[in-house]
Length: 280
Image (cartoon, rainbow, N blue to C red; front, side):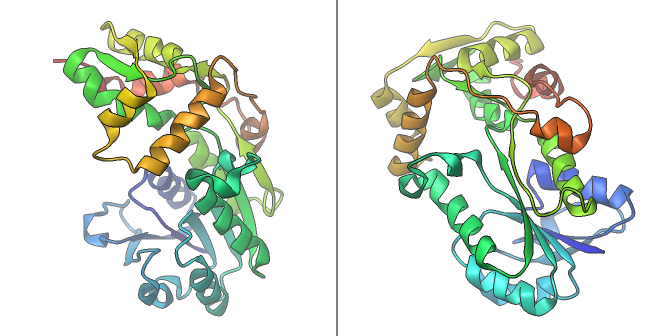
């Protein structure tokens, strides 16, 4: 079985590549800049950008299964070429945001929903993974924490269910290799629901350094992030966090059922990544 892995520089894709390679699968990793990818020895690289259809035929030639990051811009063309190439199965890394009632109007959820809709209309079999919040989302706090020992939070009491990227990779590996998993749609969460303030406390424990969670207004946070976050996305995030403020998220056991063990905690993720938040 030849598996094409898109988004190969992402944390989930890198972990999945190693898992499949260790199992003896023929893995091909795709990237806009394949020369910058460092896969395990024996893993091939290929040039592919999901927003440039000209590269689809070469990247998909001889591929049996695809691990797909959600990119909606040319999903129809991608799936048409995948069908022509003989691809039999696509595992999509989607988002739990598509389950919200206003997903079609939410700029964060909409592109995931568009990809899911295209997959559902395709004759190619598909398995959909819908994680909640990635544990690695906390890395957005790394720079301010290292610079000042504090992070500004418009909704410090907003809850998420952080999922370790290695667990998502194991879930994707199961979807690609276990026929019992194939074809399902899975809502994946971490093992616990934690507020942002609680996550900051976990990071402080992991680094052994105090970290302040500083409440700020929506307007102040928008101004702080304006240079790198489009306004529509910023507003969508703020509205999402507001909806979760003071309300623990629902934790599922789906990930445990897929990978055969309890998921990793945010505490374990923080311990592994403590250096990213530790001040000199």
